[in-house]
Length: 303
Image (cartoon, rainbow, N blue to C red):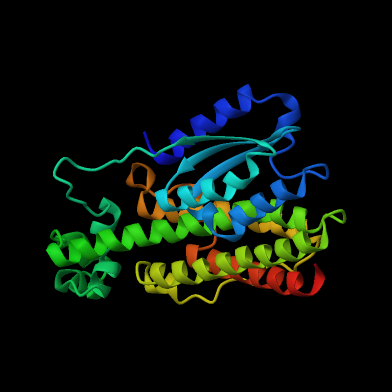
């Protein structure tokens, strides 16, 4: 079972067993004590949210946390962050770990989609792929793209792992952004926490922008040149409240993140019709980068 599926099952069970009052308290409320609000903010501000995928449930006695531990060091720091709160509040943490999916001989293989990606293999210096790149469509159908040698194979594995890791980090920053901005915009939030919340919001927005740039750089090496060189559409003018704009970015990042994952691991090794109707992946990343940049500028002058 994949890591994402495992955590989804945990999350579903969490929602089922949580009392109705707790469902609306996944972020600190006006009556949440400041120490608990600060712990939640520091979980995001210290980037622990990148190593621990956590669902919070604030209640009258304290907080319950369901977590998927992706990085053990981050999890230990998370527990240390919560430890000083235990004398005054009830802190319950439930942890699960992703299943390791390794071959018996621990040999990592590149995804089949990258084996057949002659643009990327050509960029990495594969002479057979360079011959494919120079050939026209009819010639390509008659040529056989041989398996990559050991060095190219390792580079393809690293490319896939790096791209998926950046994609996960971009999605994680974006998923938390609306809740963080909603908290930062709370007029009842104390001044010290408001200042901290604003900076954490900006860190998440900058994080999204940073990983969009890295993904764009990586994917431009693996896409046909006609797609990699297109100028792209202009993003729609920014409007709405900060929370509404953050929500749109979060949703857009979620969709782009799925497309990046499907690029590395396509379903049934085919391209869906929905994918063909969408702007190119690089074009979508450029539009997303513009939306994120505009939100960053608004946050710097508004909150």
